[in-house]
Length: 169
Image (cartoon, rainbow, N blue to C red; front, top):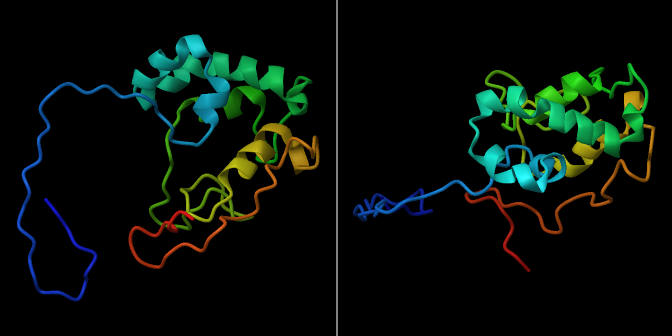
């Protein structure tokens, strides 16, 4: 099926046949940007990418936790937690299930100061939020040099019409 970005036209576009023959394989699962990249070892990437999300937590949480505690001084001691109050085991259980949650009845955002991981808006600073939760400790103040990617916004404004993304350069 083809479509047009012209919302004001009464012209109906003719369907275009789509060929789905052949074999396909999922190459990378990335519900939350950078999570798979950072926490899944190279030897386990293919297995992680073909594991359905409902099974990822049970299968990969211990790997995520080992990598989190190895990478982040914010989880150096037993009982350490992030600003959400999640200890290493709980937080990595959440991360290992690599899906993008969506709030059906509230604000959709990765983090807006109140709501956390309820979806994602284009302007959400996803990487900084992830860095804060991984390295920022209980009040976002620990490890300040690791807790921000120092990219404050997109270099161009997003469009108000589909496809919303700014044109490159």
